[in-house]
Structures are given as C-alpha cells and as structure tokens.
Length: 501
Ligand code: TXE
Image (cartoon, rainbow, N blue to C red):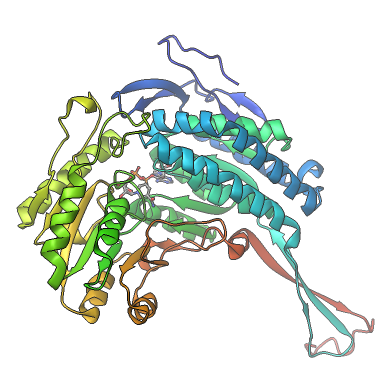
C-alpha cells in the first residue's frame, strides 16, 4: 500500500481512492505525531480538492456499479461479517497503531478493537433484515408499499479520540444499508484508518466502495461536505466544527448525523455506594484522559457527602499512574494533540481565575515517566458554580469540576443547565431516584450506578447541542436509508384525469 519509508526515515502512507493506494494529487504530505514522544512518526498524504473530487467520483461510480449495487443485501452483509473477522485477527496490531498515533492507553484501544467487530457483525446481520411495509391504503384497487433505499455517497468525518471505533459507528450501518463511503479521518490520527482500509480490500469490498482521504478539515472539509454528489454527512467532532458542517450541509439540503461531545454530569446522591461512585466518577473523567465525548466532566455531589466524596476522589486520583500509553500498567496517558494540550492547560487557568479551588493536579505533568509527552495532571476543582466556564464548556481533558447540590430538583436543574446533552450518570441506591432522573435528565444516554458503557445494540447520540441522530442499535441503519412509497394501480384505468385520486 505504501512506499514504506519516506526520506525522513519515517513510514510513508498513501490513501485509498477507487481501490488504489495513492499520493495526494499535489504530492503534499504532513506528519503524524506520537503524543507520548512528542515527535513525528509517520507521513501522510495531504489531500486537496482534486483528491476530494477523485474520491467522491469513485464512491459515486461504485454506488451505481453492479459489483456493489448488484449485490443482494445478504451478500453485502456477508462482506461486513468477513470484515469483522479480519479486524478481530488484526486487533492487537491496530490497537498499537492507535496508541502510537493518538496516545490513548493501549488497554483502552485494545478493548475498542475487541468491540469493533461486534458492530460489523451486527450491521452485517441486519443488512438483509431491512424491510419495507405494505400500507393498507384507503383507495380501492391500489397497492401501496415502501422500499428502504440507500442514500448514495456518505462522507464520514471522524475525530482523533477513538479513531476506528467512531468510524465504525458510521461505516458499519452505512455500508449495511448499501451506501458507499468517503472517509476523512482526523489529521491527528490517520494511520490506523489507512491500515484499517487494507482490510476492506482484503475481504472483497469492490473498489471505490470505501475511500479514505487524509488531510486537514480546514482544507478539504468544506469541499467534502458540499460536494453535489455527496448524499449525507456523518460527523463526530467538536460542536463548533459540527455547526459549520451542519450549516454547509444545510445550504445543499443534505442530511447529517452529528455527534458533538458534551459536558456530562455524574450525579452522586448521599445514598450511593460511595466507593463505587468514586471509582465511577474517576473512570468517567480520568480513564481516557478526559478525551471522550462522554467524559463525566462535572460531578454533582449531594452536600451531605461532599467533603467525604472529595477526599476519597482525590485520594484515588492521586494514585493514577501516568506515562507510556503502550504499557499495560499506565492509567492516564498524554493529550493527543498539541492544540488540545494548550486548550486543556488554558481551561485549568480559566478555572483558577474564576475562583474554583484546585484540590488535585492543576497543570502540566512534569513526572519523569511523562518524558516529552503532552501530559496534564489529573485535575479536580471544587467550589465550582454552575455558571463558571469550567462548568459549561467542554474541556476534553482530565479536568473534573465538582458542584454541590441539596436535593434532587437542584441536581436535575444543574445537570440540565448546559447547552449540551450527551450523557449523564446517576449514583444512588434508590430505584425511585434512578427512574425519576432517567426521565428528567436531558441527555441521550443515562447510566445508573455505572458509566461509559456502550454497545452495538444500544442507540447513542445527543440531546440539544450534543448532536443530531443516533448511532448503534437497530434504528441507526435508518440514518443511512431513505423511504420510498410505491403506488400500483391494479384497476388499470385512469378515471377522471382532472381529479386527484
Ligand atoms: O475537533 P474538530 P478538534 C471537541 C473537543 C475538542 C474540540 C476541538 O472539545 O477540544 O472538539 O477538537 C474535521 N469541515 N471534540 O479541533 O475540528 C477534522 O479534520 C469538515 C469532541 O480536533 O471537530 C476532524 O476530522 N470537517 C469530539 C474532525 O472534523 C472538518 C471529538 C473533528 O475535528 C472541518 C473530538 C470543516 N470545516 C473533539 N474542520 C467528540 N464528539 O467526541 C475540521 N474538520
């Protein structure tokens, strides 16, 4: 797929267009950096508008081709299941590449790579179970039924935090539905996407069904989203970029799925199993270095247990082992990108200036085991008020804000008082509180006495500014289909041509 080594000595990758591994038309490349080492480790094609044109044309041609459009849904599903098997075989290698490229823990990436095949199996199995309906129409002599048809070329734009998992959530249902793909991975984590791309070829997807274009969102994002032959855009990323994608798509009346992160609340009631809740809150914010859309970045803690909770949380947070994300024993890895590193440190300063009290961490990690990497200490702020920026804006780093509350109503009011609504956690022994909050919280996912659980079987997506549409689960395939209503007159006579039937 690639001339393996560039002049710099680093591996040089190519991107996938129409079944061929190619350089950017203009020959440009960019470097992908290893966040733990703080240095470049691979070279990637830097696509321009000509490459976008090539990729979309290839996907469009493939969408119409007998090799793809002519496949039965069962045959399409089988391809996805075969892909699942190949991914499982390559899981360890792909996980290691993800970790080198984005600095997330190998233990986390390994777990994701173990899960990814489940999505391809599930949607592969679903491909031939998408059925239309026969409508008991109110007109004699008429048959009316529906067909579920693919949309065409789907552009998938993905971020750097869980590169293959978040792409899978789009590619698996989109392909099962019969669409073709142009995938633009994040410029910070393209290597695993390019390695993943080889597997589609190996299991027999026809050329052009999956194309991978690497490069910068600021350079090719708009061209991809607005291309007249692109039927749909599926995006995961920040809300500001998501809004731009939505606005561009709207100008061309294109449907979008948007998954845009959040400011999720983990709500701890006084009747919770405290040690369990402490572990849950830690896992929600520090486990993925806070770089996850579902980070539980606000802990709302009932006032009567506030001090005890903070003490236990800080004690556990202090034990977090930082360092090389490739080691199984590391618990908190580096921040993935240089700009994100600067952003997280900025927010730490913002919180201090706003008057929050830093009770753990609070800056760049200077530990020897962190080397030259972009590490931020696991950080906890108390005395946070709901209106502070640190309580309202997505940090996307290991920074937790603790806000006290008195009763259920206040907890719900604080939890819902942000523009986001991706997820929430509730820690309580009361089944009544659990039910009540699951109804009142404005969030696409509510976890009770657990956090960060996701599955191919369960819908995932955001309320409010956290997004549009759902990924995973039965309904996700509908995001990539359109319903056609077919009318057949069995009488064979057009009665009065001037009156609607
Ligand atoms: O994301 P972007 P960034 C949040 C998090 C983070 C912030 C910025 O708060 O601090 O976003 O991160 C592509 N048209 N999340 O800058 O810009 C880009 O190339 C089309 C939350 O890395 O959203 C990449 O492939 N595409 C989140 C993808 O968008 C464009 C995960 C995401 O990048 C584009 C990541 C454009 N104009 C960050 N500009 C989550 N929901 O999990 C960029 N892109």
